[in-house]
Structures are given as C-alpha cells and as structure tokens.
Length: 256
Figure 1: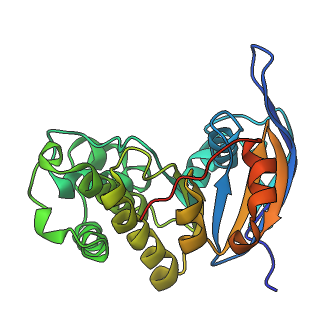
Figure 2: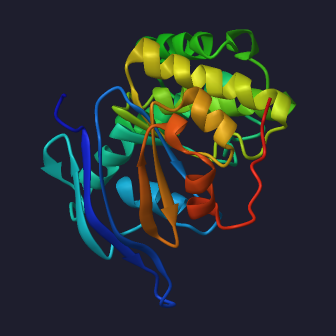
C-alpha cells in the first residue's frame, strides 16, 4: 500500500467552553481514497475536517500531510495548506449576484496577486481551467448565469468546481448533500466520485446516510462523542455496528 497522504495521530480538540469535540483520534488516509466519516450530529465530524486544514486549531496531537507535520505551521503555509486541502461546505457559500464562472474563479484568489484579485484580472489559463471544471461537473452551460438563479444541487456543483480551481490534493466535503433533496443527492455524489476517479483527488467526506456511504465510500471511519469507534469497509457496518455508532434504537434512513 502507498504511503499515507494524510496521517492523524491522537488528535484532540477542546473548545474554550470546555467541550471536548475530538478525543485522541488517529487514522491514515491513502492517495486516491474516497474516505467517508460518519456519526451523529455533534460527534466531531465537522470539527475533524476543520482541524485538518486548520480552520480550527487542534488542541493537541499531530497532523501529517505529504510527510510534513502541519498541525502547528503558521502564516503563508496555513493559506497554502487550505488550498491543498480544499473544502466544500454544506452551505454552498457562493456570491449570489456573481456569475457561475466568477464564483468558480474565486478558487484562484489564493494564488493570484492582491492587485489582480481586486481587479478580477484572472489569466486565460485560470478561465480555461474554470470552464474545464464546470464541464467536469456538468454545468458549463450555466457559466454566465447568476449563482442565485441555480438550484441547490447546481450551486453545490459550482462549489465543487470552485474548490477544484485551488488545485487541491485532497478535497474535504463537509455534509455536501445535507441541504439537498434526496433526488439531488446522488447527482452531487456522482460528480464527487467522478472527481475522485478521473482527477485522482483524494476525498474525505462527512455523510449522514449509510446508503450513500455504502455506494460511494471506499473506506469509512465512524466517530461517537469525539472518539473513533470504527474503521473499515462500508459493507461491514452491520446492525450491531450501526447500533454502536448511532445508539440503540436508531433507525437507518435510506436515500434512493
């Protein structure tokens, strides 16, 4: 097996109010994986993703990315890390009055000079890349349409294209289909899988529904109360494991 692209060792996050969101979490992620993180709301899934790219500061533990320890890097290296570990959020975070293409090009801001950013002066290559990523997620015909004229599923596909414009090595997806209706969930997940397979980008994705986990995940880890309680194949999560992860009496909901 290849060397991990990401290694998390005894990661802990305690918030100022004393809540321990992560308690000694350790796992590896290998290049090309589609790793899914599951668990109840409040189990630490979102905190974990935000610690990986330093949107949240870990309290203790180690995060290794491509052989570099990154849990305590500062300054420009943090900004670089957030480009290399690009994030897709549950809420799409698009600029409503800007066009789809303009929103996608926002992914290049971290790699563009301040003057060019202020003047929206993106290179021809930047624009070509943005259109290529819009084509990859099947929405290139909407390039000149305002973002607020799109459906939720279309907006999330724009958010994926914007993240790809950062040229990431890993894509962090925090509940990317939680705001979408069930009929649209598979469309967005299909495009994430396409990004994973065609571009070879490693994906770490938080999900609620096990039916989606089993269909799209190559491996799964589960959190409960901030602790890692399962690592393995999605297909091995039986009724007993489901109860241990989600609690006795929990019912599985399927997204068809």
